[in-house]
Length: 227
Image (cartoon, rainbow, N blue to C red; front, side, top):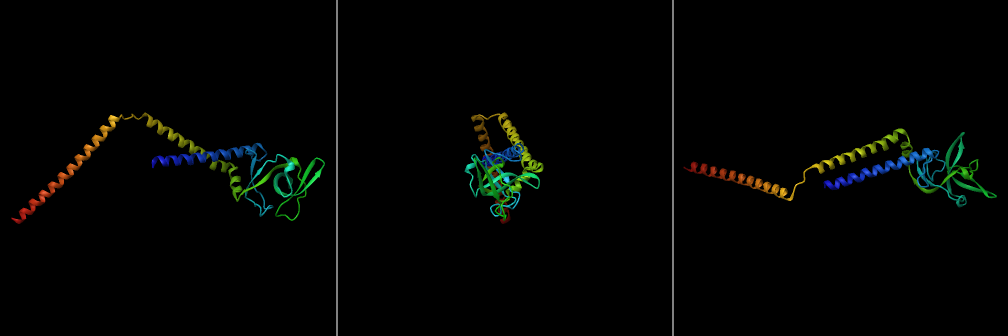
């Protein structure tokens, strides 16, 4: 039972460590790539508005994949791209409403599923970040946003990693103690068993002797009362 519990604790500790490392990679890769985390070509994003509702809504977590060939994109695909909103360069995720072909170049007219009109400015190839792969997790984007804050990173990443390494240090110390303990030979183990059996038998005899004495005293008392 103790060994099984130790294995379960080890598995939980490693899962926590791997999760912490994964989030760390995402956070630092997003810092290097203009606030866009890239993990083997897949990019997790937190939805910032309800413009694509009901496909996904604000606070959801979606995953997009880098586009290798722009000519693979077609009308109806959902893509994420850089655009200017209120004077700021931000990421936006809408559906392709139309594709403009001019010679060897393409541009894309976008529209949010929850919007009544197309976006005003077309999207150029250089602004495209990736294509949505139909994967989403409801409300998980809020958790990802929290993890990317200093407070969230400390609570959810730094603290678990510290606890993991403290746990591993504890296991290492326990192992050292076990190694330094003198190992009993087979003869020593047999001697310990023999002494334990002798002590047990002696205790049983003592208890049996006490019970016999009590019986004798009871019989003597009964005989005296009859006289």
